[in-house]
Length: 145
Image (cartoon, rainbow, N blue to C red; front, side, top):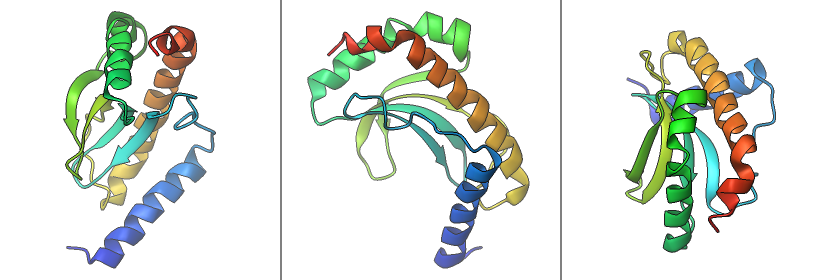
């Protein structure tokens, strides 16, 4: 069991180590669509690479999600075969958002350094595929709004 301070330190080391292992400028929040962002997520149970749709405009969110849903077959067949579309993903804080994501299938715990390396590889490969998809269909996605 880790104290809050030890847990926070491990999380900081995890993300710092990832940045040093795979130094790259990711799109993340730079999609030029408000409330539409790519994210890495890691905790004690799992690691995810996500595309979150969470602006304050519910109609815009719905339109963007539906536009991406229309590309689902392409996304699955060409980029990310294990992608999950979730219209009602609940975050730890209780907020419900639209989330399109891929779960790291290997055992992972942010407190276990032995699981970090494979997770970093997963993050790198999966986010790269998400970004390629976004660049290929950016204009089409933006047509939704």
